Image 1 (spheres, one colour):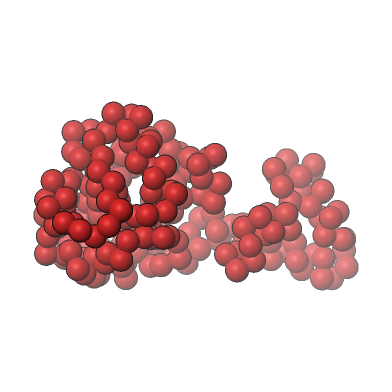
Image 2 (cartoon, rainbow, N blue to C red):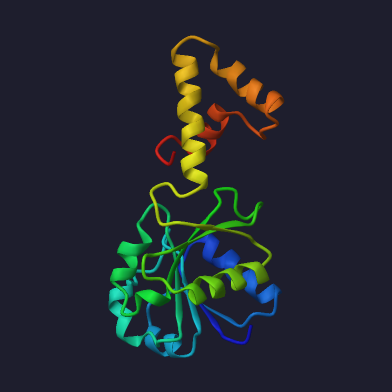
Length: 198
C-alpha cells in the first residue's frame, strides 16, 4: 500500500492502530490535535477516525478538503453509517468500522458501508485491515450489526431462562461454557462489556 494513512484520534486504539501500520511498513501519520489538519488531509489517501476519545473533528468541517479518491474510515460504535456519510462531501467514499470489544487481543473488525458507499471503498478498507492482519467481516448498516446483535440476543435469552426459574445464572454460564464451548457464559459476557454497552 503506497498511500499514506492519516489517523485521527487521541485514544489508545488510535495509537495501537498507528503502531500496527508502522510494523507492516505502511506510511502513517498520527494526528493528536486539529492543527494544520488540511495540509495532512491533502497528503493522505485514507483517513481513519477513531470516535472514542477522538479529536473534535467532524466530517462536515473538512468535507471540502476531501479529494474524490480519498477514503474516510470512521469508527461507528452504534451510529448509522448512512447518516454519518450524509454529512460527508463524498458519501461514496465513506466506510464505517467497528472493532471487537476484545481488541487488540483479537483483531476482528466489522466494516459497514452506507447506502451510497462504493464497493471499491469497502474493498480498499478491507485491504488495509487485512494488511494489518485483522479478520474482516462485512456487515450491513443495520442496528446492532453482527456481533452486538447476536450477543445481545443470547444475553436476553439467558435472562429469560433465569427469570422463568429454569436455572441459576451461574449454571447457565457453566452450561454455555461447557456445553456450547463458549469462552464465557452470557452473564459473564454481559458483565465484561457492561450492561449499558450491551
